Length: 277
Image 1 (cartoon, rainbow, N blue to C red):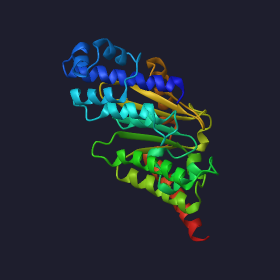
Image 2: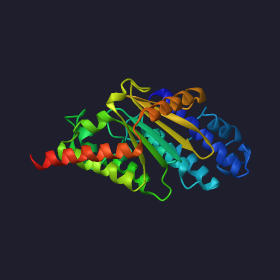
Image 3: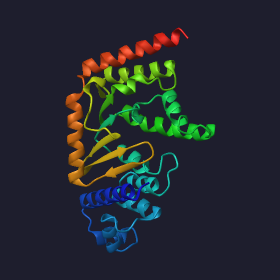
Image 4: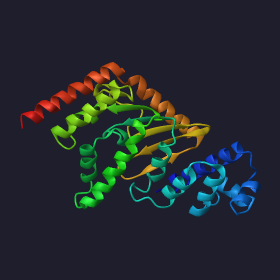
C-alpha cells in the first residue's frame, strides 16, 4: 500500500476509535487503563501517530463492545494478501460505509462482478499465476460483493462508462451473464447504475476509477485507482473536489431507465453471439 493510502487508513482507525471511546463516555486515560496501556498511547492511536498491535485492538473491541471492528481494521492494515496492498484498507472501509458511489471507466466495479468476469480480469494481467492465486482473488472479490445482499447494505451508486459494456471480458457468455447480473440488481432496486455514453466525449475523470464512501459520524473518503496503484484520500478539500467530479459525471450520464435499457440491449447482443458460436 502506498504510504499515503496506509496513513489515511490509520487516520480513519484513529477517528473511529475516538468516536467510539467518546460514545462510551471514557477518557483516553480510562480506556488506556482498561486495555493495559497508558492514556497517552490511546491519544497517539487516535492521532495516527502510533499503530496499535493486534492484541491491543482486540482488547479495545472488548471494552468498547465494537463487535471486532478494530481487530478487523488492524488485520487488514497489517497483512491481507487477498487484496493488492494499496486496496486492503479500502476493502475494510467499504464494509463500514453507509453510501458508496463509484465511477468505472473501463471495468465493471468489483462489487458488481460475477465469478466469470472476476476470473477474467484477474488472469488478464497475470497470465502465469496459479489456479490457487486466481481462486483466492476471485473468492475475495465475491465475498466483498456480499455487502450488497446484507439487510444493512450500503446505498450503492455506480456510473459505468459505455466502454465497460462494449469490451467482451471473458467472452460473449461471461459478458452476457455479467450485464444480466447488473440489470437484475437494478431491477430489484439493490443498486442504482447509470451509463456515461461514449458520445459524451471528454469527462471529469479521464485518468482512472473513482470511489466515494460516506460513513456514520465519520468524514467521507475518496479513493482513486489506476492499473497498478491506488490512493485513499481523506483530506476534506480534496474529497470535496472528487465529489464535484462525480457530480459532473452524474449529470453527463444517461438516466437510470435509459441506462438499464442500454445494459439489457448489450446483454442480449452478447447472449445472441454466444448462442451462435
